[in-house]
Length: 430
Image (cartoon, rainbow, N blue to C red; front, top):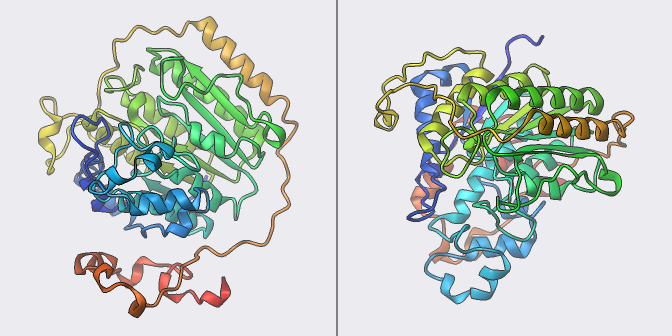
């Protein structure tokens, strides 16, 4: 057992003020609610809190195509009518609308996951949390399923600089298709996704037969589930599969996407998990004592999302939280019970014992083809930061940074560790 885990937690209040638009199920406001609940339980006193850096376009282009990043940077609600071809090409529209401060939103949540990965790489913490991250559907050249930039892929690419093997686990109700697709041909990342699967359910991928290709064959694991799965069947299956995966694959680090739309009562989900059941998966993964990067993901009943991620922050801190929610800025959302736990759902469980057993057998059978953990020839570690040089005098004065933005960039001296201060990097080193 490690002595007490060192936990880094990333949060920027600006993510919670973005608005996807009326009637859109994605409500970033849930992140403010989560953060205030974390504060009201005084969990912030037990971890290091950081404001993430805003990921630079060049960092986002480590995975995404440069033209797509450039388009996200440029498009605004006022100008989108001029770009109908590009909107179609990059899949922006109803599910992935253009809204005010869209690009900054992407920079913040992606910056949080990249920073989390860097702190783990530098062994400055054991567990890093970015509840704003986990947007697992975004593809190299397009937005998808409310996700624009795939912070998870960017975080994993960062971790691969220091780790031969990364294990990615996804418990969102939707298949983690963007992450799986990004690493489908490599054995250096194993992706394991537990999700609802069906032709009519987004994104329509994630069959147990999708196992990776070429060098990545057998390194993508999908656990397709039906409506109504409950705590007992979910956690039993999860523990059986994940313990076998860790034993055989021997990852150096784990990335855990904790989408809360797999909870009972979610607006878009159809599972029966209680918060305790969901959190049991987090507790189980933590026990492997491997460096761990934890993100959010989906979750569309926002008071339950806040409850879930707060309780899971407690789990990661080995802190039991009282069920009575303390007074906080969003207390009215938790009426009438004002309690942290939620009951299981009442959707009929369509996952028969024989169905779950068949899935388990297929997954474990595929794992047998991996004789042992692949050894990887590690290259020289690339530098963390690539910061483009620009001359302030050449900037268009109308586009210069306004005071509000400048103020937000002011950091306390102790918020940085060596090599992580944007301004120290000598461009000749890159």
